[in-house]
View 1 (cartoon, rainbow, N blue to C red):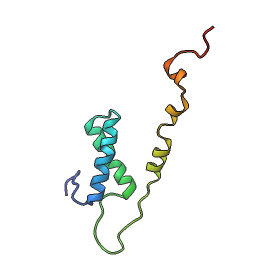
View 2: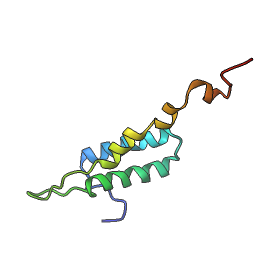
View 3: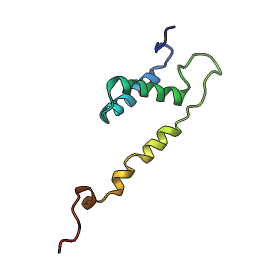
View 4: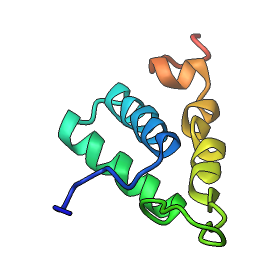
Length: 92
């Protein structure tokens, strides 16, 4: 099996990678870099390509995704409208 072969990944893992990739592209990351990061994320969460067989499954670790979801938007949420526009509040 050549490097980069995605045949051992399940349909769910492929969908996850596609969704993550779109998120990175939406944030302005280049297509090739977004794909690389997406598959790295899927590998980190699921432990790589899944193979069939009884007792071979491992629980998925979603701590990084959960942290990112909680953390996202925290910086912009902390800024008020006057700070972000650069105007001072009081004009005398």
